[in-house]
Length: 91
Image 1 (cartoon, one colour):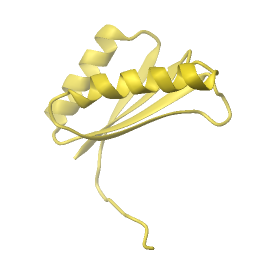
Image 2 (cartoon, rainbow, N blue to C red):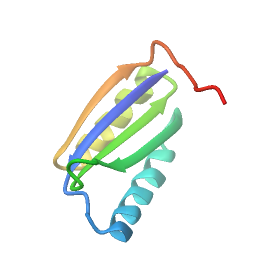
Image 3 (cartoon, rainbow, N blue to C red):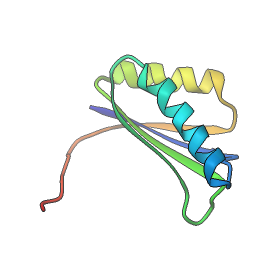
Image 4 (cartoon, one colour):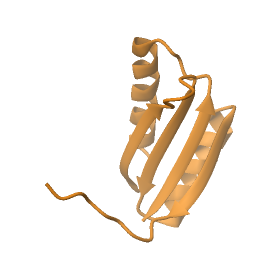
């Protein structure tokens, strides 16, 4: 599994606008080949900074998502990470 990690400035600080932006980003990303799971949120210390964590099934799909975002979104910083270990909490 692979993760695309994104960071972008210009995230709305107003809650409804921010939620709408993240919902749009999630809907677009959900349609990407190999999509497994994703999270979108704003930075605690810098509310105008947004973060995205998106898991994809293959490196090729992660690269394709990264390319698509870079071609369509300005001011975004993306990294691809191989998921080497996964851990879950116990209840």
